[in-house]
Length: 309
Image 1 (cartoon, one colour):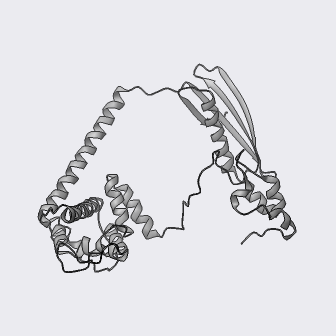
Image 2 (image 1 turned 120 degrees about the vertical axis):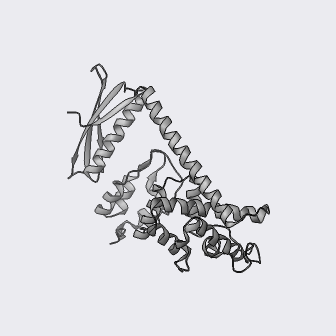
Image 3 (image 1 turned 135 degrees about the vertical axis):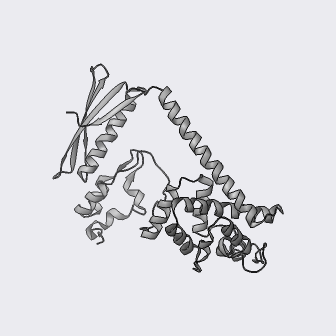
């Protein structure tokens, strides 16, 4: 349900215009007196239990809603392919139809002509560029991916998710490299006058993919080799912490103990937190205090461990 502001506290709300007015920007803490006098007890407690960033930041929308299972599966597979970032970004832009093909440019009144510059037989929109154009069809056939043209879905998002769901990881990786270079060579054709055949572009796609996969193998071998040569950095200080929550008062207590590697006691610290909503938040606050203590000790390496027992 929706928590309502108590009608009897109308005078206290004159200074409230934005939610940020409930925050003391100098201390980065909630204005608890104002919150308690403005909202009902249960609502005020929920607000006070929201952790605040220690430094002021611009407001940013981080989530617009829940992803559908199809979207989650699509993006999970996209990131798992470990593609070069420039390719992953292009795939993401294609999935949202955020690329500047002529249909989009005409919609934005940048151009009046939206006919495909390669074949001249259709409107240049996403599905035409990546599936329908005769040039693109030759690319898919040369890559042995002609099955991606079997689906007649007339929506770029529906088509991409269908291909991702129907393909193996290797096929999907090749498919993404192809989308990237189809778009790249489309731009070179328009802006530089460079032309090639679908078969020639398919060979280029396979070469790029082979080269990148080879680079990944070399880098993996180099990391393994360095791992044998570089001795693990041994932490100079160990900080152990433990925490407890009083669920009636929503207060938690955190105890921290710091030792050097010889077992000598370096520091003891206790911290009380108020308005803690759950045991998980209790542990999170305790871990944060451990990190802060490690920073305050100004040592090069710290190991932080839960529970001081």
